[in-house]
Image (tube, rainbow, N blue to C red; front, side, top):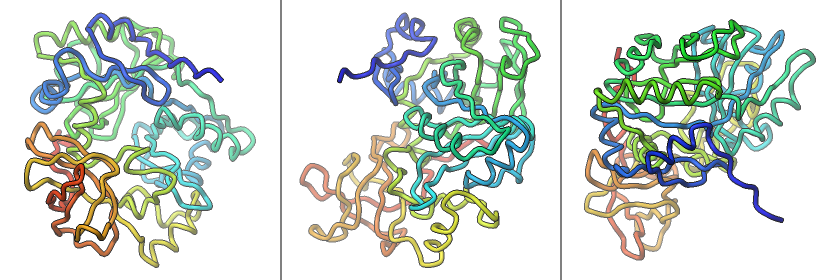
Length: 377
């Protein structure tokens, strides 16, 4: 059977014109890096402002009477803690195993209209599970190709958005829906731009969810307005180093159907007092008994760089777990990573990572590795 052709972002030609190097992510061909390179793109976000096209992310609209109540009975986090105009990180967990099917962001528009943003490779599985469980009157609509997602991240992100007439200055994890002068002014909520104070870099910034039909004009406007502000197009390579410095987990590496929220230390994204959500009974039992593994941060005490699947050990021949994410930190100038290890390991222990046959010393550290500014007003 022939492999499916990777999908392209509506902005693919813009990235080609900028000389982007592409790689496949979840069935989409997306920019990995530009000629500037990952390190400079990373630094642009930490010190100024960068822009990412992350349109490969899923977009599911759950709508109808009781949409919020339905989602709240499936996803781990408690949507009743927030309200319209707010976003929330949550998990889709398998009801039988407690494993993480995906991590998602929910955008609470009103009680009958919620946007769910899964990872690209899990969009169809999340849609399938929600559709199968939805009560009469609630529908799950897949808008994967109908919207783009642009992340404008960094200390000067407000200036870039304000320069093109988009609202800025709202609180972290809140969003504003707006018509844009170069876009569709139809009052239908599905045609408006969502400007949300979220991101995956640890820096102050915004994510824009916009109809694909306005994407080229929006991209051009942002790039034009941002030129004097040093706006740098960034690929998913820099996104990965930035999120690793924050200790943000990546589905398919740090979290997966074989890892539970308790093991991933994502209990803060679980509404433990809710009467129902997928995996509730399994996770409560595991929480009471104690998880067998835990996700920790590791920092090299030398020059070694960890990579996924490298063995983590206390003694050379006694494995304790393995690295799930590892990279060179452009900010710290040393190797950092996340590792899934036995819960018996002390959170401040020194461990050895098998780096190509050599036992290299790493210090277990609680992320983030770099001080975040994402919540700064």
